[in-house]
Amino acid sequence: MIKGKITDLTVTDVRFPTSLGHHGSDAMHTDPDYSAAYVVIETDAEDALKGYGLTFTLGKGTEIVVCAVKALSRLVVGRTLEDIVTNFRAFYRQLTSDGQLRWIGPEKGVVHLATSAVLNAVWDLWAKKKGKPLWKMLVDMTPEELVSCIDFRYITDALTEEEAIEILQKGRKGQETREEHMLKCGYPAYTTSCAWLGYSDQQLQKLCTDALKEGWTRFKVKVGADLQDDLRRCKIVRNMIGPDNKLMLDANQRWDVNEAISWVKELAEFQPLWIEEPTSPDDILGHATISKALAPLGIGVATGEQCHNRVMFKQFLQAHALQYLQIDSCRLGSVNENLSVLLMAKKFNIPVCPHAGGVGLCELVQHLIIFDYISVSGSLENRMCEYVDHLHEHFKYPVIIHNAAYMPPKDPGYSTEMNASVLQYHFPGGDIWQQLIMEKKLTI
Image (cartoon, rainbow, N blue to C red; front, side, top):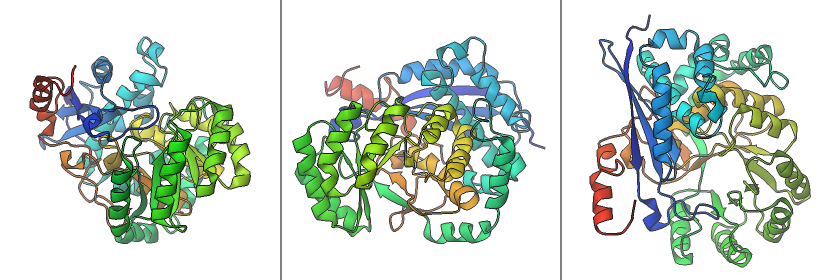
């Protein structure tokens, strides 16, 4: 029995001034300040454990997500953890189906980001109660227990509960061997840190040189603002990493459909594995058109970091609109919804290559992708997880990268707990922001 009632849920607006160094810059988001709505759940249990969760934002607007979290908190405070997790599907649906709050979603946008932050904290608390890292707790759960956490509403035409259980049952074969492999070798990663759009050529070259020395073999380049600039930068990167290492492109939604096709054909000489978010993240049929046009060139389409929910992923898969599926631990409705997407990807035989980076996204998504390999996909073919070397020092249990691979976390929980940096970077009252405002380097 899991004792203890949830007594409080607090949320903090935490922002890091990454725009000052052009970190995270791309064709659509030129000056992001990586930020988070950071949730803490407290209980009256004797062990005094707390659950920590977050959702990722780019600065302005974080305050709106904070308001949405506060609006959802009344559905959480006063409940027991046992009451939540013994009927997790019902709790998930309660959060996403509030008769009035649902109108400002439903299951998308600000209210869904807030839902993710709240549920991430619940999962962190549950894993800590179990004394296991989240990935291990998921691996050790039975197929029936895992499926009971998923809301299958709207996706049964693509994946039924019975099919999900069958996938997970088949995934149990060889599970111990795959877990041993993860503990020894980790999950393969690719780096986005070398080629943000705002970086100079000199900075790009230095970062690629350093990454190659550290053993990185998979690199992503931001593109989409200027074709001649893209040609120059892609040439630099391809020449530096050589013909055998993997190169991916990311346009961050910059183009119209036909523009995306023609632009990527110009960049095809650099042999990219995929083009990521070539057009509007909501345009499923547009992605399908791009996928079909680029297939003869051997270039796939990747998307998902701004895919609202499981229903959109269902349609992307049904329309053959992507070749690489990118889940996000803070865009979807936490672990619950990501489980459904991992299972659909397995059924449609599409590799999952998660979106990460930001604030805490690497810390969170490593749990999901390690679980996916051990218990769902059972494969590393054409699979890798994004890594961005920013802001990990602000977490109590930061990611560990060894030989360009995520090493499985060993501490209990979801790796979501931040350290005292929360106070310094609290917006706008934290010391860091007050200093930047005083020096007129950034304004509110």
